[in-house]
Structure formats: structure tokens, C-alpha cells
Image 1 (cartoon, one colour):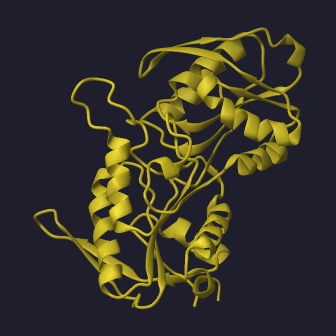
Image 2: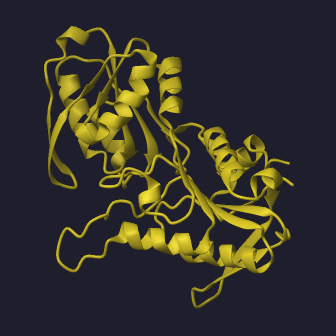
Length: 306
């Protein structure tokens, strides 16, 4: 029996692509908010005996988490064989350490919460810092789908003679994954951060790459301050308008405008978070990740693949 896919509100477009690529059966889910702010969830497609996947990207997560947990509880109560979470963007990965006395290690606590309510998890390029894999945080089978091949394909189709540039050392893993398989030149810059919007970029001598189009790449575009700083320096040195590519379009208010004002050319992100810059569809890659993970779950692979 094919898996049953429910989209939480706001995730319908991604879920349609995921269901088609998997393939999975789209399930009907209804929700409404009571006057006191509580949420009612109703699963109109019966989940009994089915492998269920709830699709919910967790950008701005706090108002989304309670409806998600209610949907998971409803699916389990109504007899779902398994209940998984497809979170194209996975929240609460930043605070993986207590940087000051008394701070909650949000990454660990959030992972424990989701692990208590779901049987498996698929996400796209979680922002891992001190952890090397989701298995170090989550107590359930968890798969991280890599978006680098998708970004590389977009660059190949849209940028002539690219050089891939990462704004800081944290971006090195994304830059090498994008550039190395295609044999593209790449560079990683240095950065000092003094605040959310106060960063200093050290731009090295790139004269040996003259004639190429810079492509600034990272996993997340949030405030845009780092990329805007790089763009201004590149433009001041006579480089053409850089393209910007990223996995997750977090985009704080005015971030996109800041990049354009700095002199950016095309800006392309995947659709893990809905945004006007979405030009790269990740649903097919996520579907493959879901198929692979479900096939490896004990006693579930045969039913899910049938």
C-alpha cells in the first residue's frame, strides 16, 4: 500500500510535488483555530494501517509545532502503521550548546520532542554545527537529503563560467559539495561577525579567476548581511553581478532587497521554505529520501514500496 501524505497548512504545494515524485497518496487534512487560539485538527482520509507522512516545513516553528503534534497524535490514534515527519526545513538546530549559564539546549530538547511523536524524519540539509549527523540528536531514524546536486544543476543551467564562492568557513562543506563534482573553481572567504547585521568579510586576491561569474552559495540566507558584504566588495573590484544560491530561504525582512541593492544578480533558493526566490524544486530529492528511509524501517519497507 502506498504511503499516505498529509500537508499541514501552508505546505500544500510542496506536498503535491512530493506525492507525485514519491509516489504517495495525498490525504485530506482540515484544521481550524478556536477563538481562544487552540487548534482543531481533523484527518478526513482514514490513516488506519497506512504509513503516514506529515509534511510541515518548520521555518518560524512555534505556531506550527502544536498543530503538527496534534496531527501526529490523531494519525496514531486512528491506527496509522507508522507516522513520519517530512520537514523540508528543520528548526531549532542553532542552539546546540549552552553558550551562557541557564540557556536551554534547544536543539536537543526539540529533537527529543519530535522523537517522542514520530517514527522517522526526513529533512533537507539541517544546519549541523557541533553534531555531525541527525542520529546524534534524534532517537528515531532520520535522513538528511543533500541539496548540493540541485544547486549545482541550477548553476550549470543558468550561469556561464561560474566560480563558486562561500562567504565563510562554515560554508566550505556546501561549496565543495556543489563545485567539486562539476570540476568548478571555488573559494571560501573569511568572516568576522560583530552582530546579526555587522559582519566583516576578507576578500582575497581573485584575479586569477577574472572573466568568471561569481556564485555565492550557502545553506541559509537569513539577514543577507554576509552575502551583501561580499557582493559590494566584488562589485567594487569590477566583478559582474554575482548570483546567489542557497538551500533554505529564511530571509529576514528586507534581506532580499539588501542583496539586490548591493548588486546581486539572480537569487535562487530551493522550495524547502516558500519564497519568491524559489527556483529549485527539492521535492524529488526529498521523495527519494523518504523512499529510502521507509524501505529500511523494519516490517515497513515492503508495505511502503508495494
